[in-house]
Amino acid sequence: MTTLRYRDLRHHTSAGASAQTKVYSGSLATVQALVEAGADSGKRDTIWNGTPLGWAEHYLAERKDEDSQRRYGAIADCLRARPPHSATAG
View 1 (cartoon, helix red, strand yellow):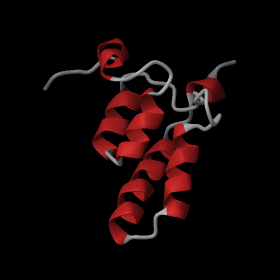
View 2 (view 1 turned 90 degrees about the vertical axis):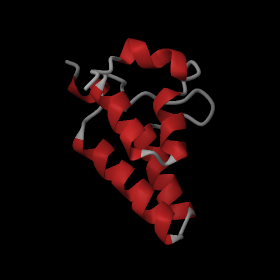
View 3 (view 1 turned 120 degrees about the vertical axis):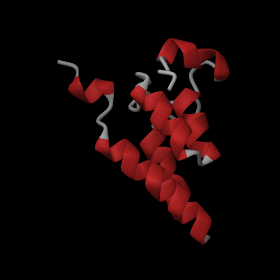
């Protein structure tokens, strides 16, 4: 099994939009990989000032089909279980 590091994942995402973009994709595995590799789940995007959890919750409220509820619900649960770096910094 390959261990992913955040610096290895940066080239797969555009600057400032890594976790937010992956939340939009609906891929729990990708969001988990980014968070576990050190991506800050509390980082806000530069356009809407939203966090990855905020976007997951937005998609839950906006998209009512069963598949979206399952995917974005799982992503929101994952992000709630791991506090953002900014919340643990002292």
